[in-house]
Length: 151
Image: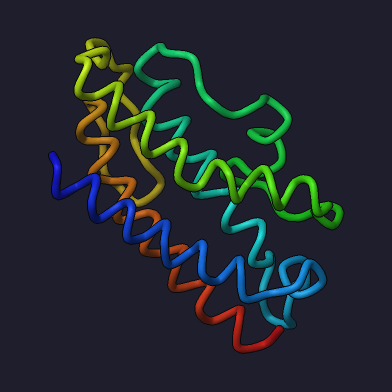
């Protein structure tokens, strides 16, 4: 499990570097041919991790309902993110993973509501969700790497 948390932290470090190297305007820009932007992808990976690991475990999430509604699967940017929202996403990048590791080590992940993902994986445990999350974040990092070429 330690390696899984290291992979996720590495993933989030890559995202953090993208965030730090782009202006608010660049983070919000949706390039032609894309349906979302850099900041949406960043918010999306945070929200998805929380939903997959915590919500389906029946545990409270570390993100607000507003953030979930704005960045969950099936959404797209409806308005530009503010600097305050970017700052919140930046803070959540690592705090959510650190708390997940702490909670895992404390053994709080006992129950899980089975969830079939849109990619065909069926998640049956929090550990499975954490593992799938690495795959999911990799997909979105690839998208972010493409978007940043056009902003």
